[in-house]
Image (cartoon, rainbow, N blue to C red; front, side, top):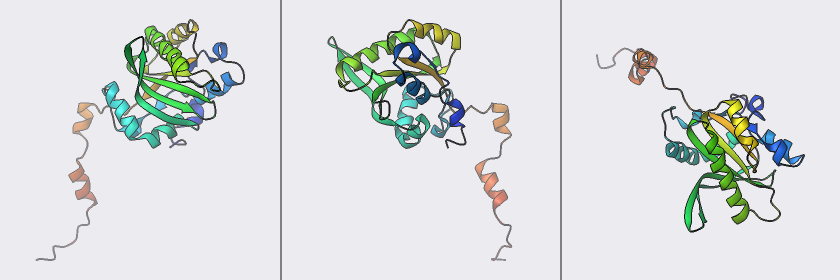
Length: 203
């Protein structure tokens, strides 16, 4: 799978502020740990899928999801609950990176990137650092996975964020246009073509 989706060419491509928010060499290691885009075609979902559907499918296919994320990721939880000031907040996906020695908060958005998404993620990172992170852990990193992004808008949005984070796109299966779909053979038609044409033994 890694070879098929050219993982090496996608590594380190996410828009991040790691160089300004993390010391070296942690900043370089963190940058290389993120990709852009992430390929989720193994979920069998199309681009019209909702956020909860994608989250659910990713956790159901956790082994393939971890392979796509790359070496070092360990799954902690989905809809990870935080209680802050008497209110409840839920993180889409929480991981721990064994090589970076830090938590990674992943937020999924089925819309193009918006600057306000970075503010929400910054809040979650502060909460994980305060409530979950151990003293020996490195600062928590955030990853926004969006349907698409304007790279310059993402760069500007991350400049003002205090916490280390990145923005990347994800790709699902593209929907087949109706005109093309009607021209495709059905499963029964394919099986009929593949079935050997033996003489009827009952005749």
